[in-house]
Length: 376
Image 1 (cartoon, rainbow, N blue to C red):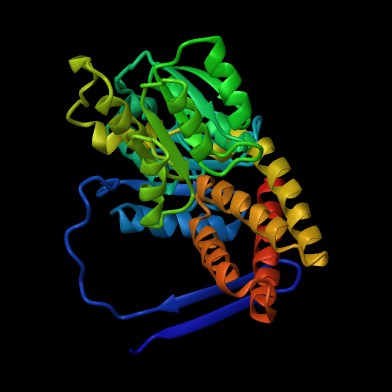
Image 2: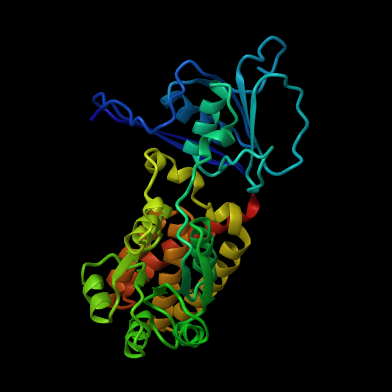
């Protein structure tokens, strides 16, 4: 194919891999991507590799992009400065031109809702500055408000707060339950318009919760939530008395569609531009719930490693399943996909030698992810 692979390694700093391929010219860029033709951007960040990665994407979107080092000179203020800092307050900088500041700690700079962990969000923010607007203005939109009282049965703290945040953005009142038994108790206390339940929970799983609610005469929509995208999941949910099922991680757009299905309010129809803008109002897990992510992942990792030491396949599978869902929420989907494949392997082969080797590699990758996030 005429490909080229290069490796640059520096002691105590890390390694940089690059793959160069000669490919045919692709189709016209997606109109929903940032359009930065004519923009001149200087990028400053704590790491040269991060700076170069950002510059590569900005160039792909049409901008002229370069590292800000040695270029922050008088008379160059017509360029847009992208200043990526670890946290606020960062290093003082004398700059009189347009500037977009993002913090890797997840803090918000100057009220501009730009996600430091999303390159497209940064790209759109620069696009707004290019047009003379505030980055925040691009993300302002009217989300449909459903005013449902929703019972959420979910045992994972990260999934709890994520679903709660999404539903509250859509005008819902949320009651959280940590398992099916707690959800049944909440159901008997107050009325709800809709139930969202994880299908895999301790004590009483989502399938049995749905059966018990239907047995008690519940007629409200019951939506199953699962990390399993297998086709038989729909059958199991329907047989349990659920109306529909959703696969984690759940996007805000998906929640709008399912809530709208059970809403009789015509005002909840989507505005024409919302399909494009949903990703900019989607709550960012690492920005909002970094500590919960790290603490739950560390605990699940301990459970997995203990299960491996005890040859306890059930314990390993439970921890693997929980971590996979959390990593998918945090946009580490490639690693989550590897874990899903390992789950399938374990269902047929158990903790065989091959599975243990794959598990060891995945555990090392998880450790690296957690260390990277903790160091920010």
